[in-house]
Image 1 (tube, rainbow, N blue to C red):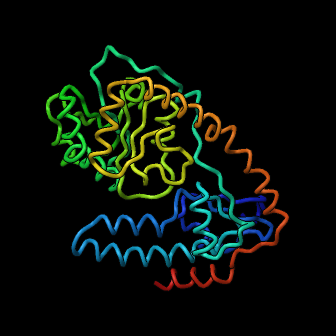
Image 2: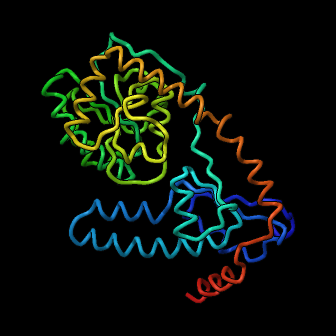
Image 3: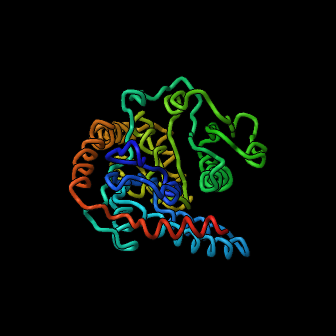
Length: 318
C-alpha cells in the first residue's frame, strides 16, 4: 500500500483486523470498512439467547467485542453500513462523524433470483434457507421444528419443512422425520427450493444486520413469513410485502394462510418482488458508492495511525 498508493483500501467484514496491521500505508489512501452488521449488537443478542453460564460468558464476549470494534473503527476514514439502523449506531454509539458513514443496503441480483409463480403440483413446503453453522440460524431451525411447525401440522398435516443450506450439525440432521422434515445440507442452487416452496419462514430470535435470505426469497416471489428481527433494517411492510410476527402462534397462522395460496398471499408476494427490484437491486443500491468515495477523498485523513501503531506494538509484545 505504501508503494502502490491506491486512493482507497476497502476491508470487510467488521471483524477484519487488517487495518490494525498496515502501519506503512500511504497517507494518500483512505481506509473504508464495509460492514455486515454491528458486532456489539450481534454478540449481545447471541449472549441473550444463551442460558446459565453460557449467557454470562456471552456478556463478557460482548464487552470484548465492543472494545475491539471501537479500536478497529478508529483505523478507518469511512464506514459503509447495510442499514440506517446500523448507521445510527456507528454515529451515536461509536461517535463517528456522520459524513463518514454511508448506508448502502444489501443488494440482490434480481435477474438471478428471478420471480417464479408458485407450483400447485408439488407437496406444500415451508422453506428456510440459511447457513446452519451460524448459531442464530440453527436456533431458528429448531424453533421451526419444535414450536412453529407442530402448530402448522395441526391444520396442514401434509406440509413439509425443508431446511436448506450448508453446515447443519448432527443434532439438526438427526431431526429429519421421514418426508416431513428434510435437512438438505449444502445444495448447488438454493433457487430450486425457493421456486418450488410455498412459503419461506425465517423465525430468527438472534443475529444482526439485514438478511440476504429475506431479500432473495422476496425476489423469487415466494411468500415470506418472518420475525421482526429477521426483517430488521429493511423497509418491508408487514402485511404488504411479508408477514412479520414474533409469536409461534402468529407465525404458524401466517404459514397456513400462505400454504392455502390465497389471492392476498399472491398479491403480497408480487409486491415483495417489486419492492426488492426497486430498492435492493444492485443497480439501485450501488448508486451511492461513488458519491461517498468522492466525499471521503475530499475530506482529510481521519484514521488514528498513532492508535494503530500502539495496537501493533501491543500485538507484537503479546
